[in-house]
Image: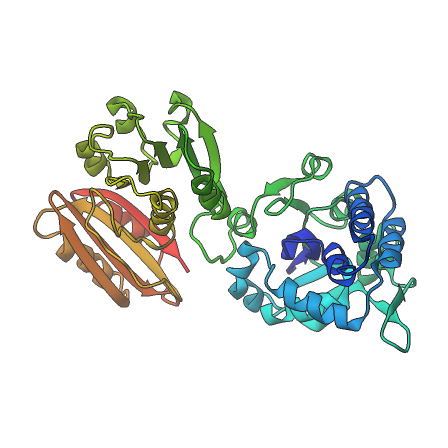
Length: 433
């Protein structure tokens, strides 16, 4: 039996609630726009939390919109720029699952269809409401016979469709949870990349902060090797808000603390530290998952450079105290995690890599001794791996080898194990794209 993916649109596939955005467009010149907009937003939230019926919410919002087809054209262009980041980067998944990746929404086809079809979602797999227009193109209502216009509409629709397969629901609202409650889907994944509603997350089978997370836990093809929401980014001390924002926006699980608390030592993946704070040597030596440190100052006296090299931890710091480094350093940290770049690192060979596209990138950090590259390439040759490109740089005691291999090449976990077991290996990591 096939797997079917029942995906919500508003605040899931897109970052926003489309009717709320339409109100901003259609009411832009209305003297009471702020009051009306607040009423529309209130209708949205009450329905999403299950406090009023969906039909009551829908009818109330449509009546307040004062919108027409020209406004819808502007809305579509806006929504295309507001696709959720994790859906945007997993476009390939929808291409490979075009028959079973469905959009099921209480929104409207008039704006949903042009936004999702560029992602290989078939028109016949888009289930949503439709507007009614007068002869001048003004929205005057909606098709009240569509099951999705009613309370429990998603449940009614799926009962009518009688899909034979394993169904998984992904969404942010109460109507998405109702599918699980009805028994029509096997698992409900509460999508929280854009908004987290406690009334929904506490009832979910799994909370998924990104579509990457959904794909990861279900062992499905995805754009990145490991969901960034699973990578702990610890920010220590008085760090500018822009630095925090950059790392949060990139999808890392961010914690803000005054000190590097012991309980985070074994799990921290990124560490951003304010100037004047020193990292304890013993704690640093036990941070086995730590991949990169950003220091907003000169790290020379505050972080043991020898330990970072021994552990394969890439350090970026602010030696000259430039104001722009509050943005530059966290971006360098993210670029290392996302692409493998070590440009402007304080302790690693400086390597700027091409953007990863249709390849798997294997990052091998090792002690800088003769013969390592020969061993690495022997492993690839033994496994009949086609290398697309390869980069090597060394600095002092450390070597950094980056290999891009064909994404279509089949390989198993034995290859990765062999690469990790090469003598003098410090760290090994794989990136998908």
